[in-house]
Structures are given as structure tokens and as C-alpha cells.
Length: 307
Image 1: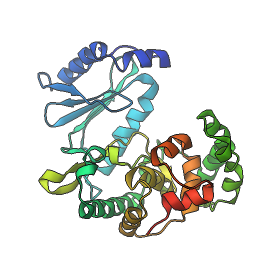
Image 2: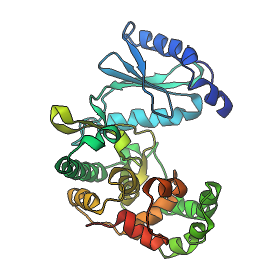
Image 3: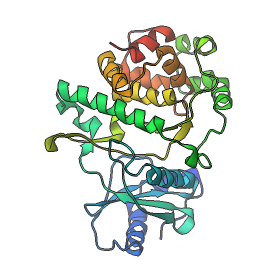
């Protein structure tokens, strides 16, 4: 049985502890008809994720993250076979003891693109960028209304207003230097935010760590994973993680990706969404990408401009 996790403190203690979690995960696998298969936990991830044998993945969500588990379940079922990049096939899902939810899915073989990236040649990187753009175009063209009962926000402009109201303080809590923080309010006030954007299904964390590749097998991209943060909203919002963590401020690669995507996007809009994103952490992005820019307008061009 999976142990109770009712507080953040319990989660911090239980989720990393394999001596506590593994027996519950093994018992759940047995109930799902997978008893006896090797159970190997993946090192990455904010929730426990296990390879079950060679063909299955079991993802576990404690009670506090149960809605994320339901989102993963619904989105995987919705996307089955819909994208040019494979997504895991949903095999089982439900609620287990003590409020845990589980999602059992097919395993997509290969390695994460972040690990493989240094070995990908320039031509392969260009193809991957194009393929990512084409996949995002298909994702954003899907009718997301069947998921609207679960995925938010219900009203995009109201969501942006809430995010804008806390934008400066959110970054200050993350120790953003004041020279940057004092620019945020004016930048957002002048940003070209759409008042009535297209409502698309958004991955929200479309990044190398969530893309799977098999370069040895001759297939640049063999999977796109991790849909529990999915939302419905402006397609441009999805390009924040793309510019920061997939093309990583490379204007040529972003240009190739947007060519595959089939549309251009204003860099200042993407910079605004960077500040308004639910996971926004500008100090971290600055440490990771080490830009030369010293203003948000220049940063927009450096991170989201194309060549």
C-alpha cells in the first residue's frame, strides 16, 4: 500500500524514500497484472516514476497532486496517435490507497534529448527543431474543448491579470536583482498581449528534458512526455519553454522551429509570457543562459529573436 502523504513535509520525506514507496508501487503493479516485472525508478521527476519491465511506465501522484494525475490521464488518452511525435499510450489509470493516483502508460524508448544533445550533429539539430515546430503546430490546432472541463484557465485574460499582479514580487522572492525587477511592470504594461487568443491545448514544458530521441536508431524524436502541467490557452505561451530550454536562445534553431510551426511570434510577447508563466523563474533562466542583454527589451530579442 502506498503511504499517506497529507502535507508538504510528508511529501518531502516520503517521495524520495524508495524503502517506503517501492513496496507500494510493487503491490500496485501486481494488482495491475504486472507482478514479477522489474521495477526501476527514474532519477528525474517531481513525482515517482517507474519503468515496469521493458514496455511500461508507472507514474504515481500523491493526494496533493491527484489533479495532476487526472490531467496526465486525460491528456494522454486525448492525444493517442494525434501528434507526429509519439506520446505514451494510456494503459490504466485510477485511484489507489491514501488518495494516490496512478497512470500506467507505454514506455517510449530512447534517451532524453537533453542528455543526447551534445552528440547530435548540426543537421540533426536542425531536423529536430523543424520536427518540434511541426508537432507543436498539430498540438495547437487540436480542438481542446473536450478537455475544458478539467484544464484551465477558464478565462485567459483574467489569468494574465492575476499573473501580472504578482509578477514583480514573484521574481523578487526568487532573488531577482533589482535592476531587472524594476523593469517588469513597465515592460508588461507595454507588452503586446492578445485580448482574445486562440484556445489551444498547451504542453507548457515543451523542453529537451521531455523529448525522447533515438539517434542510434535513426529516429530523431521518439517521444514527448510529461503532460500533467497541461493547460488551455494562447499557443504562444507554449513557446516560452521552447525558446528557453529547447532552442536555448539559439536564433537559428528557433527560426527553424518556427518555420516548422508555420508562424512567427513577436519576441516581446514571448518575453512577457516568460514573466507571466506559472513556473516563471527569471533568475534561474539568467543563470542558465547567461545573456549579454541588460534590459527586458534586449533580452526578448536575445532569447526569442530568430535568424
